[in-house]
Image (tube, rainbow, N blue to C red; front, side, top):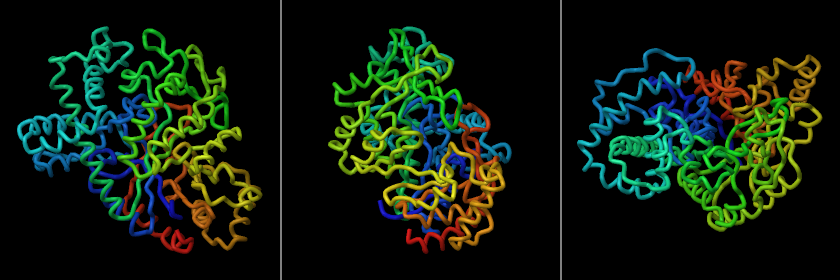
Length: 488
């Protein structure tokens, strides 16, 4: 990857009149703003159907897109809705109200689907191609239809006939329309997403997608591939994923995702991962894999434990998996989320495949460490979606550290008055090949701008949204001379 600058901003955080950031006009205007200011990378969060707590890291599918990002106006452009029938979301929301937005968009989706069936011949060729190229679609659509039939319960709690459909795959006439509706939503989602990504690439902006290493139990992926996970005979996990006590939590993080059956996957040559990466590669320019260390060693928690304190480190597939990946995809671009207290073998795995790792300045915010500088082959962040914002962090520090940090930056001739600007300018000037700044740090937000607090679920996680798009565009402009001077 060439020396460049990027912005981290979730699609959901974009402004818009439909309650949530989506694939509408503001997404295109956002890309224009990136291009105009010399920003070549846009990192987003996972776009898959949001599960428990509206977390993009607990999804119903590792392939499907969440229909919540479908822009209703674009459905009108296709002739599936009348523009005159479309209303704005009931009121301006400073944060994303996920349940409210879903309720708002649902009737428009139903109406568009009804009209789609009437004019299906116009879309048949494109629709058939999409279905042919999406081998996951039938199972996912059936999963969602059955999930709704079973009051949105996880598949392990469905009635036996529904739960066992994945084994028989019998034709279910009672689900025909419900399955077709789910397929329609995915067709619309990827039509809009592919158009948006093509527009970004045409403007010289690459998209970095985010792939969680684990998938949720309540997902079509686990339902379809039960032998690839450590489950009991009823489908419940025997062990779950997480991390032991660390910087973020004294009790660790118990994510609850089922653990992979790596022994079986190795025998089969990792088809689950090859299919997953093939789809991601087709829809993103760069793939950031969250919790990369889990490929080397993973924290295995007995499912009977309520916290992540109890568990053990177990060796993962490491080099064997990545040799397979690069044999199949020699040109794939993967970024390793390699944060935390890691053993040397994790770093060796990253370096042996020449992967970009991550450095977060907020974790290095001491003059002594900052003086050491950064290596080239790395992506530097001021913070991630799991961190406090820079200004929130700075506000909590003791006076002596604040004085020392400002002296450090000013001695290097950075004259910005605001702390977030000092750090951002410093990051852009660093030797790191890639510099990515969360939009909240560009804006200098404090606590109200935090995207997620690890080990917590629900409000206000994942709900932050840009309030003033013109202000955001204006703040991006200050980056332009810094980017130019740093030759990014």
